[in-house]
Length: 236
Length: 186
Image 1 (tube, each protein chain N blue to C red):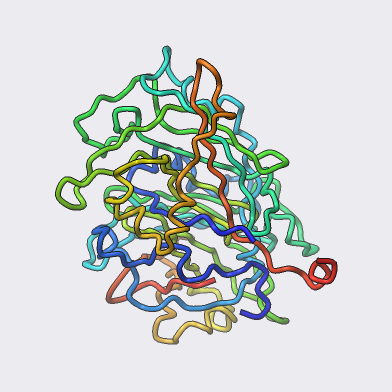
Image 2 (tube, rainbow over the protein chains, first blue to last red):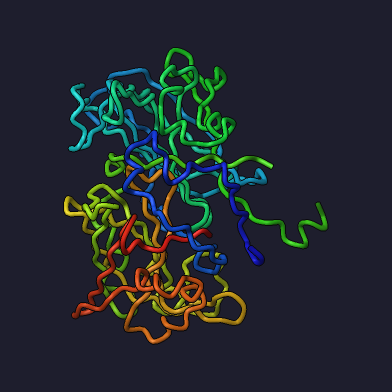
């Protein structure tokens, strides 16, 4: 739309609102078309302040109890960038996940797997000047769900981030390389473009791996970028 | 150009991270302006309540200024108001937002927008966030708003909160079917 500050994503980037393979979408998607509106000051601004309460300890998910949580310790690191590769700095990144046995510390999760008193499964961090975040956590387990017969979610970590505006808001899930459950998972496969699906899979990274302590996985996140201003276009 | 990371559903267990006590209280007593409460229920295509959704709110302060570096208007910032909150629905699908009536902000061209809140809705079964707006029935400017006027006239009422007394407003969300809330492509 003319006057847009932020680029609009092409149709095959995000999952469709109605995805029959994921039963939960059936009654929760609008049937009417979305109404196209211009980007106003309301949309190009967004919550960028109020992260003052985030501390270093919040990005270590292994420090929540009196002892160590059970499971495979992992480091998850990445950069939050916009579509032009510009770092998204000072931005809140929140994540949550199941424990190593595949159970969330949430009252609604009744999966017959043990809770871990030393693992709450939630963390937050602020990106640095290069857009980088880093978490220490436990590799989550796969777990069953009721979507279809013998349905299992692949191991995943939920990510929530805002970026610089209301329009850059992103909620997604990070997966692990080589997981045989990915091919069977309707949520992962709701992303139309196969290359888009691949962008949801973290990369094992030996250089991020801390010897005798934790495996490293890298997960970069790309949020909506701005149209070039006339000045930027001129100077390439 | 780098390619976007796709959306995925927030799932049913986000409350362990995204919802904290008081997170739907956008304005404390100290915030300037007329203090209001917006309450509503989220329902699905059968009219059943949606007990596991998260409504996210973004709005200007009472003077019509956003707490954001891209808002250069010569209007006062309120140190006691960021304009951001999260309202998870309870077992009855109900959410309650405590805030202040936002001021008017510029719209496209030389227009001025009516007071409004931006809402983002996340839930199990919602793969990609839904975005809508809340306007106020008793605000005269609502009926000339440049964005609301882009919505087919017969559907505008779904975006207008109704006063129910004592500075309280009712704003229900219907994700699908009869009375479906208008959602935006922006």
